[in-house]
Image 1 (spheres, rainbow, N blue to C red):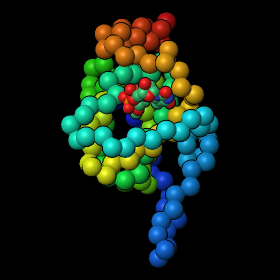
Image 2: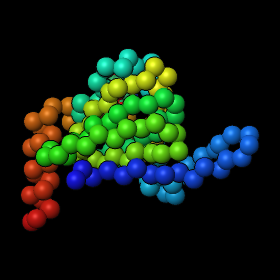
Image 3: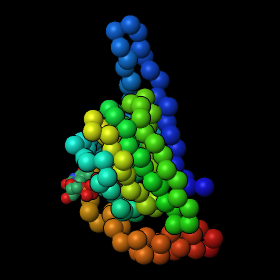
Length: 140
Ligand code: T46
């Protein structure tokens, strides 16, 4: 089983529309240090292709749809995002690729750390080695 969570945010809706509120350490299980968003990606483009050493993120599809393929080094799972009231929580050491973007797809990401390229693992074999070493470290 790949370690991720889909967070279901409370919708404060009425006849005027819907509203979701997100607070640090409440709906979002960490302090948000950075927000970024992605749009205008063609359907078949594959983004991501990396893991993070430390970073945790909550990914929200604000409009449209897309698929996240999550890989823990032995198993893969695909999570379809299609609703701004859901947040995909991805922790460290998970290889992610995302694709199958609808033309109107807008993704917003809440991140636990500021941007740091040295936190990225962009080579798949290095990711597998890192997963193995982390598992060894845990059993010691
Ligand atoms: C992730 C997925 C979901 C910055 O300068 N600052 C930033 O905060 C970010 C996120 C990126 N960049 C630069 C680095 C690259 O030159 O923007 C360029 C595109 O970034 P990248 O190729 O990493 O984008 P994605 O869509 O493949 O991945 C991004 C995040 O980087 C990553 O952490 O998990 O979205």
